[in-house]
Image (cartoon, rainbow, N blue to C red):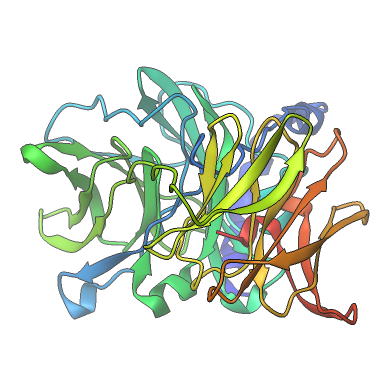
Length: 386
């Protein structure tokens, strides 16, 4: 047992001695349904962009993770807090009563079980109250990466979107990622305030969060997702501890006039894939809707997408992949062969894979890639593809 888990157990044991217990509390928690927002430009819940975290001094360097929590109704709103203010939050902070936290059936809880308290943080997005639940845990499929920061956001136009990212990996890469109107990341213990500096001299104050067992503090800030922002972290004396620049979400690209490959047909339509000049992939439906890669295909050669009205999953895979398999949490498997991809891309296209209508836990789904002999080349959790 490590020191973090020791502190957590002691804190929870002490709190349990003084807290009333509702015999139906767990059932009430897991009864809250969650809907995973589909990937793509239609709602853009997982469109990440790398950005560099620059320490103000070597001794005060911090690693930052930014995780998306995107609305379905358009770009995120700005903070309604007064200029020049910031706030901190903890499990005992006052304010509105939070809803039940993610339960044991939540896919992020299952894939990254908490080893700290789950801390609710309220924010105002487009005039609506939202709740972001934060915790630290270890990725079940890759514990060697070390402890990870997780978030899930509900309320307003958010429907349980979020993610987890290992702190150690982000620190090694010296980069952060994020999108959506709510950004968040790691802050050193001495940090007491966060602020996003936007174009035109605008700025938005953020929140600094701590919780039982947290190895570091967490910062959150809400601003329009299309804006490029510089996040400034300061200590109690107002000294800058670190800053990071986060690139705003670019608009979806227009449909190319040529170069498309038919990925698959469905009754009444088709999905066509394009490899763009910037190295990203885009997929267009007959009804004009589109989705696309969140990174250049060279950096993420295995991806899964979905476009309405078809419920089929599709995507691309490395050149040595002959078949893609989606294995659900209950063990059921669904697969599709690959076809030739864009010339010179080193990729193959696949799909569609039609999943059951009752499919509701993408977090428990594993993506397997097989070669022409049927041997498994690799496997990864669906939620890890981004």
